[in-house]
Length: 316
Image (cartoon, rainbow, N blue to C red; front, top):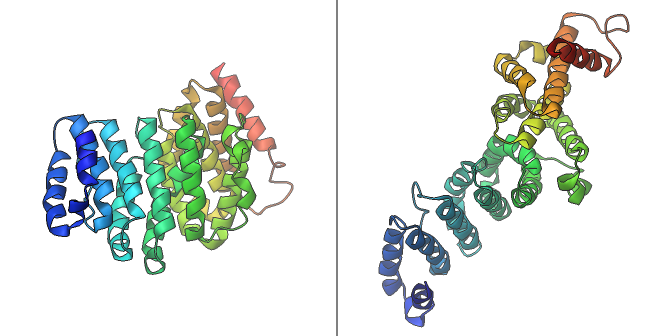
């Protein structure tokens, strides 16, 4: 490793005609079976970037360490690329980051969120509309992994979330991103943030709000309790912020099925959140079929409470 580091810093390699074959050699090293060589290649690709020859990350890396090292190298490289290269590579790099938001290794998740944040900060004006599409595709994961079980990944996600809010035209969130958002045991700060975001999206981008229903249902099957809990809460918040008629028209079969599966979740908090969300959806659907009025609608929260009591009475 010391040899490679010294080699890449040698003044002779500032000459492009000599640097190019070295980069080819390093790129070849990125496909080596040895994790040590592959990780080294990722580091050296990042060091070589100022010469204007960005090297793509290795395909199908063999270990989480290699994946994480590659994305950290890409993040380091990003600030040294030309505007043209940033525009050309931002979407493929964003796709690579998004693919690892739910990786089982927490360091990989943190690296993925770190790369996505760097991409958001580097997006040029003429490419912002394209990158906004990547943000839209990532929005469910960005909202939910703020409660990632890994403090490192949660912190990186929070930073990426904050960097991406301008792409969706979200405002008034400046005071929401503090330590209480990540460390609050009850998750109420996070729930408030998701509610504030969804309320804005209901006016600015209702189509995104609806697409989040599908994305959120996938996270209900997460292996992490924190993500399942946040997803169950988000599903309820989405329903609360949609028009009753639209909730009635949407195909919510998969979402409701996934929520019912959580009735047997090891976490009581997840069970309760799932039951409350099903109750919210049911009330919205009933509201679309009848005129609102005191004789038809239970006080806010009362319907959910009755539903949860019935659920646990049935389970008992």
